Length: 121
Ligand SMILES: COc1ccc(OC)c(-c2cc(C(C)=O)n3cccnc23)c1
Image (cartoon, rainbow, N blue to C red):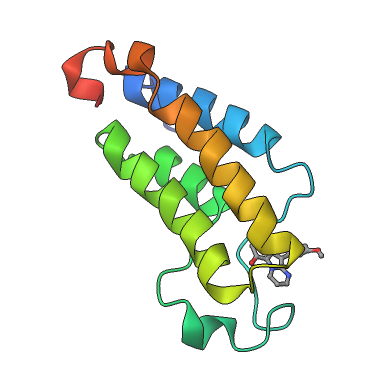
């Protein structure tokens, strides 16, 4: 059998993996861990045309689909705004999304992060 060369991960991959772990910690109820299904959220797939969740973001990072930090940040914002579109303002999901968005953007837009090599942002 051909020995699979262990793929070295790029600096961007490692940064996004680190950021993902920290963002997922903010979702203590795992509302954003997996894709929202029409079973748990009636009509979801006809209202939300671009679904996004942490497991999809993780898979995209594994696949090398992110080539810079803004692409990753866009998916994070999409995930939160989907929840603030589908769910009414007074729901636990809307509030969780709003909290996650603000807490997450603080990490993602830190000046320190932007000082990283320009190729990462
Ligand atoms: C109550 O337990 C769970 C478990 C997983 C969920 O989404 C992956 C959700 C969930 C997550 C969402 C979102 C993110 O809109 N949602 C909306 C309506 C009804 N349920 C949800 C809830």
